[in-house]
Length: 140
Image 1 (cartoon, one colour):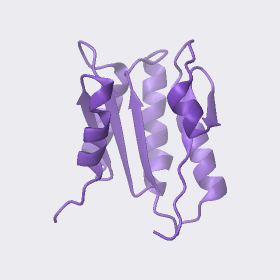
Image 2 (cartoon, rainbow, N blue to C red):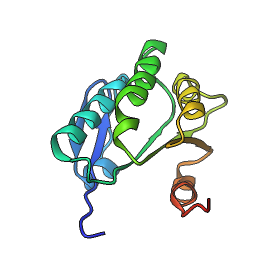
Image 3 (cartoon, one colour):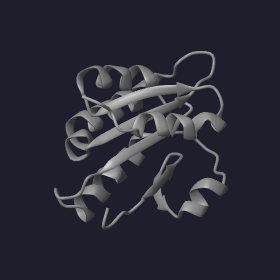
């Protein structure tokens, strides 16, 4: 590609755009409200990228959300906004004993949208293999 941009968003109760260094190396604590990250993502897409861009997105999470309403709000913004603007998006959940509320909301979206897939891993170290599998060239 002639031009590639990578945007990193992290969140607790509020979302913010951060550098790659901060994204991977700083730790924050607090509540988890996921919809703020998706709202910021939507805003960045609308303000910076025209329809000519091929946008690919990835989200990784432990699946914890503040409450079930947050998970439903995330599914709504994905369905009504973000998935209409991106070529492809994946969600990876770092599993605990069972799927979180975010997984259940996203599963419904993935069943109706071809450009959205979800997957699980057991350990953070498995994440790169999953990214490779999701983003490899698929045959028709």
